[in-house]
Image (cartoon, rainbow over all chains, first blue to last red; front, side):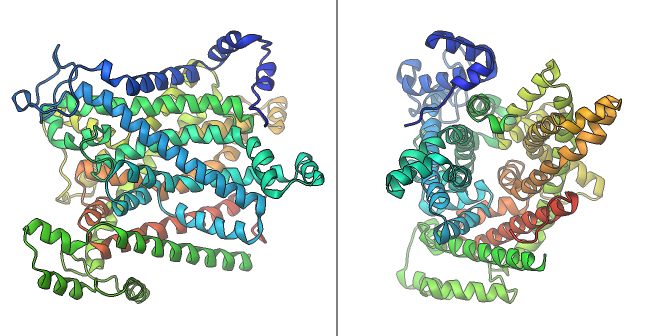
Length: 297
Length: 316
């Protein structure tokens, strides 16, 4: 298997860093924004995993007595109309956002890679048919297709993941396809053929690993879109259902009417969404510069 | 060129045909139809009455028959009736088009007028403090959900004016309408402007690295002349593609923004119709969106051939 090659990039930058630590230090210095993105993402993953230890209140338990209480020392980010602690809901919301975001990205990128590989490597009528299906999926804006899919599948965590993953497929499939088309003509594929390898084996063992770098760059960018789409779907009431605390739905409950009376319900969940997506975007940009020099900005 | 156009047209029709099947099937696998929803609200179900209404709406017929009824109607310009308002679907959809079209146009203007100049600035001053600040700003623009930005704008309105803009009544003068619509347009356009800025920047940098730019500098052309005369005119080409794609894809941002601001446009109507299981409205709205996307993509490709003489669509 080919490994992703950082070394050329590192050499070019004049770093002959030996050992992991030195390399990490070099990467942080060369891509400060990317490192910041990685830290932000790590914080969200940390919050999602250790939500039980980071919060005092249960994110679901209601308490009408303190309904709409503003931020205070006991409830840092205030209380929602049902008396639920906003801080706890945001911390637990990280689980939902990341679960849906990562789930949809993996599913969408996985299916997209398979389709792109089949399309680019096999060519012929399979390519033609798959490309037309991708055309159809791309003729609707991401959110419109995800919205109709989510409504059709019905509200549940798994269905939300599927509804977001399917519209993402063509974007991955197209990149993998064009990469595969270029790789197919290279000598190492010819060599593998000459040795008598089967087509499937060549595609999976030789072509696929070489598309890994653009795939990682793409998947990071899609993680951001997936988190945004989940928030939008939940905001519109067609995403993750109750009782899961979702950032998007926290905003829908607290929309326009609370803008006046309880701004903390509007401000904090939005910061959580923006920060999470900002983290993936920073990380994605740095990864693109590092792994995919052709697309460098 | 003629052969290319014919091929392109055929593909467009094929795509739209595919969309019509997908949307139709998705709506039919949706849990519960309009009748279920009406009866859920009433809390009482008389099976005979329910079957009667379903028969009236044609929901009892096989799905293939339902599909052909819709498509042949569409081909004759008959969009059917809304299940909810019982008015012709065309009468419900058409009046909402101008609102959304104006909003989309304003958002796009906002995005281009802010994004393109800032992108050029960022590229020309690469790695300066201004460049870093603009890059972080554009990334944060891409990270903010437009409905949240919309809510923040509403909050600002409340604290400055003590009230929020109302969209249900059309304002008396065109400039009042413009002022009113520019508020949600800013919320949608900010995100697109961030995208335009990033694209303009990378496209500009790409061009600025090329040999003919060095030649221009060597012959003594001024910085301004090189940047705007030589570089910008070539760098803008890929940006035009993205402007076209954004124009088509603005619908996504408009869905949430029209909902936040309560704008009576197409995008919000799609969400309402979807939750009410108003099949004829959803089907036709989705077809309208898809047709717009496909047409704009086509127009952008054509424009590209006009603007860039290197591109010829003989056979591709």
